[in-house]
Amino acid sequence: MTLRNLILSALMVGVISGLCYGLFQQLQVNPLIYAAEAYEVAEPADTAASDGHSHDHGESWGPEDGMPRMAFTLGSNITIAFALALIMISLMALHNQKSAKPKLDALRGAAWGIVAMFCFFVAPAMLGLHPEVPGTKAADLESRQIWWLFCTLASATGIAIVYYAPKLFKAAGLIIVAAPHLIGAPLPTEHGFANTDPIAVQALTELTSQFYMMTAIGMLILFIIMGALSGLSLKKFIRSGT
Amino acid sequence: MQNIQSSVATQAPSLAVSNTKQIVAALALGVALVLFVGFAPMEVIHNAAHDARHAFAFPCH
Image (cartoon, rainbow over all chains, first blue to last red; front, side, top):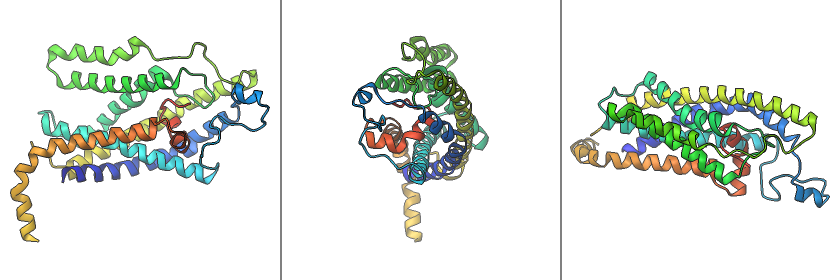
């Protein structure tokens, strides 16, 4: 019963918050991604082959531009929001079950949402790897993904320790939150864009700062809605047995 | 129907024992799904979720 209620609640929260973020993305974020892609340059290996048309993603399937691409993006937004909501609601259920601290409601949920935004966006992206438009130079993908996951896990664990642990251990929580940043995010040896044309660089720099702003606003909307609805569904649908 | 409800009610205390396991299972499912949509290296998944990965500031490319 609990598992079913957790999944159904996360589905509801994920669909609503994912749709909101999806619409926001179509209006405010995608235009920036498309604009940046116009400046993408072919990989050196491809240009040597003097093939007029080549794209990063080679021959593998990808959704057609226009409606299919928008639909897949929206579907991915909802799926990611559902997955994040499932994580959030499960942790909230553990909180309600194990902790003597006040139980979740919509307002406390919204506060959880802001903390989640820190763990999933502010710490790994804004303070670490930076949100990127396509065509930005970056370090090796795998090391960035590993650092991202490490940073998110450390942020969440550290904040949980600060919140739940006895006073004596709270400082350890702060150290865990800071650890990924002390180690440092894997960043490219030289900053910039794959396209070195000065006009492109100027346009991409401008697009990047807009992208920062818009993803941050979008993430704030997403996580506050997600947190508040998650807190509400905990109160309404999920029994907190011991 | 009443029978079913009452039997659920009487089972409730024993269900509570596995409550934590169910919560942990849901948590694991959520983590696996984030990894699949946001981080899986397969080209097809990357292409389908490309714009969403960028918009969540997941490492991409």
